[in-house]
Image 1 (tube, rainbow, N blue to C red):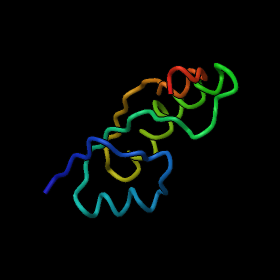
Image 2 (image 1 turned 90 degrees about the horizontal axis):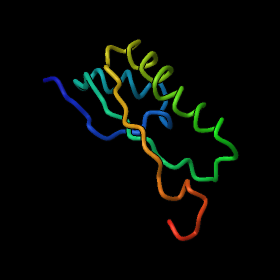
Image 3 (image 1 turned 135 degrees about the vertical axis):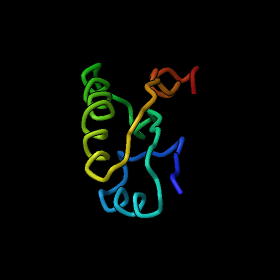
Length: 85
């Protein structure tokens, strides 16, 4: 059976997880952008994170036969404005 996981945060997972997912039938995933748990310090930190979502993670997933797609958004916490949290 081919499985599509529509919400998984692979940036916080190991490559062993990709291997296990493929063995279980996962062939495609969507990774939503998320708050990293601390304030970002500059626009460059967003660029680094988005580059990882658009470049590194698809490459890493492809090594295990999984298509990696992502959504890019900003969590309200990332506004660093208490009115948005």
